[in-house]
Amino acid sequence: MPILKSAKKRMRQDQKKRLRNQSIKKQTKTSIKKLKELIDEGKRNEAKESLPHILSLIDKTVAKGIWHKNKAAHIKSRLMKRLS
View (cartoon, rainbow, N blue to C red):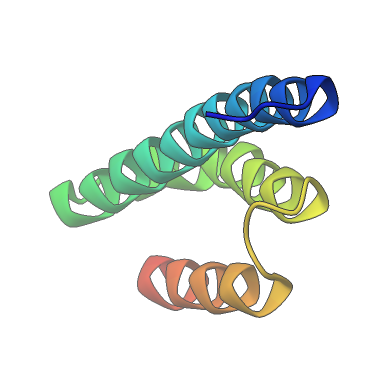
């Protein structure tokens, strides 16, 4: 356990950030999974409608520093390839 007051505060801040990052990451991954399921079921129209929202989520995840930009580009590329 930290002894210094600043170390205790940093620990609280890190925990808040970790929880926030986990929730954003989970939300993004879940939406990607749902899109893949729509594509596999053959519901391409629904998948095309939800695609901009999912791409936006991926971009926000990168902007917040949760994912690396190359990882996001890789995921977006594979989703577009899978959809077409």
